[in-house]
Image 1 (cartoon, rainbow, N blue to C red):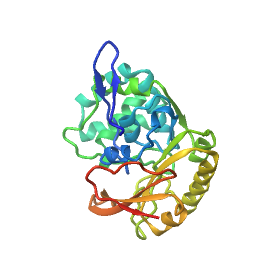
Image 2: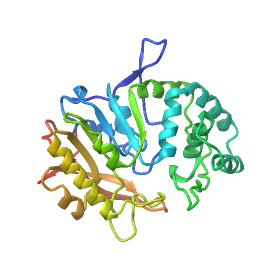
Image 3: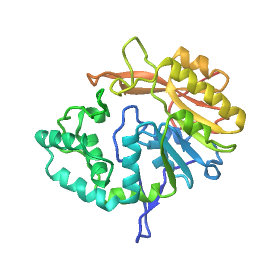
Length: 299
């Protein structure tokens, strides 16, 4: 059984738990313990790859020895890089923002973010905006400018120096890449383990999990991803996929192991909760049950 692990903090003999330091639409923070139960028993001997990184909930819960983490969102990846390489500097900038948080200050930082280049200061702006914007959404306009409004959070959970230090330790053995999923998956090798959590298809005509992203993940993107994954299967990689439980996804991955999970999601801009089903898809047999959660296995 795989358990949530911890990172060794420099100068300390204790092991600290590491949780995602960013909010991210469709993130797996609430499901990470369940997903750990689906991992192969020899996961520790495999290179871990995650081409839709987002908030990285499963990565931080697992803390693999070797990992390749990628996302098409370059802003996100650059933030991870500066937190990994300069955590103390990012933390100092972030503390400055945290002490001044207000609606007017938020818009000042947002304006600075949209005219600044990647740096430790920019990484701190990214985290501050992520923690204080509406629903933790990352959205840009046609000019590539971040335009999400203030989220009215009186006490945002902004990470401190100690938290970023543990994140940095966890990321030290990880390769970070800003790339499309197609490019990321082409670099996979036999024996690798890949966790994929792509933007979900709509459950109806308008409800997208990715409603606020700059580019929706289309049905054709889902089909292209499935083609790539069939190739991974043939090449000897193991994979686990999280996706919506829809007829399309069941058709695309019908030959693999499908487990349906009941989950609660915010599906619209009105922050209304909906009970939905998500699929966990693997190309290997899951060797143990998932705690007390009722699962519906289907072929």
